Length: 393
Image (tube, rainbow, N blue to C red):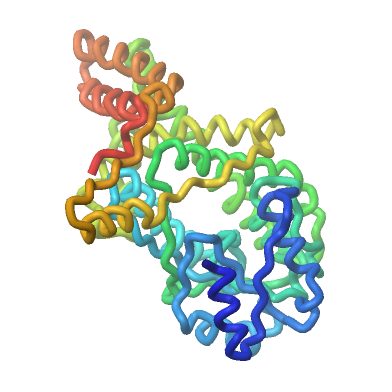
């Protein structure tokens, strides 16, 4: 389809080329590096990057290129993602809440205060000169986008985030695909931090406070510590305090402060504020996987460079259903099915059992009524353990 579209425009005299490569060496970084080797690239100043499921509007270039043309010190213009299937199921609603906060707060603040943020890997335009000066695309981690952004920033290049420039995209709607994606997004930054921390410290081209921001806020707090604190406190420490009466967690530390932080996280998606409580429970479950992936990245263990393409279902099912309706006496298409054993996640089921036992003990012997939270968290771990989180509407 892409090739035919390119041919259609080429027949009208537009300078357009359809290009693919024959292997997956280096994964996405390898593909981007290969693309910039083409002869026609030497005539270009900028490169726009979109993943396959992204749908930019016709005026995307007209609204973004001027920032690069009129500001020679800017290397990257990043657009915001919008999600066409956010209402598909509860899993996609949870993802929308997390990503909307990321764009509304994290990207916006990084752009406004330090002219730095992590490139999201798609829906952005790079200045080719900045890519070359930073050393090009590298496949040493699974976050080639963040790797390039950090290296370019250390050479003095600035980035701009455009929150009002939005590009439609798709969220993974199966829990299996979402887990693989989160492993890559958590393992990759930790692995990159391991490889770049000394380079950042020794850099002399950027100001001291920008290095503090990149090392402490961007990497250490948001990419490493946040996952570990969430998992250790809510899934390990708090349940264990029930079994050890001598250890007492004050109510302000267990409930009030986390509640305020969570409410602030909803600013990006006010329409889903009624889902905040379940979002907390779901994020606690995912913190288990993110913590595990973070340690794998920091230690550069077995799955540190694992790259599994995130499965997107697209409009295939919807189109098949529409086609069936248009045919007389046609049967409705089958829904995608998965084997039950493929859905099982033993790690989540194990923690569900642990939290259930702690909840039962608190129900019988406890004084703080933590069993209410523990039983709800148990249910969430169990639902994800049997892999049905994505089917809840």
